[in-house]
Length: 139
Image 1 (spheres, rainbow, N blue to C red):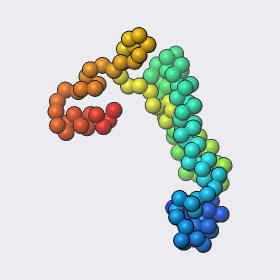
Image 2: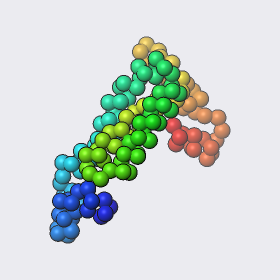
Image 3: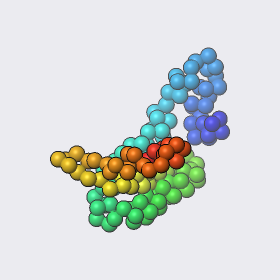
């Protein structure tokens, strides 16, 4: 974390090195660092809203693989090649869009009176023990 902070957040790095008695929660008081952290989550949230009509129009697989995968790879490449904070935040925004499009529902949903119900095999998969726990963790 030190080389990352030293290169992209030098003011936060110097504050971290000078103030050794302050808690870590108070050291990182930077709006750019907060923007860097939250940009992925905000972009994922907003792109999920737009992913639903795109998925309905073109199908789940193309929207996940093409839009989600390509934007995620572009964001990862941009974030890896970033030499300033703004490139890093744009890369995180692209990562968020990729996550938002890749986060599509993977099982059929039945709507009853406007409420989405998951099928019984999703909630209670066949088998028992570690296989069932592993299946539930994957969902």
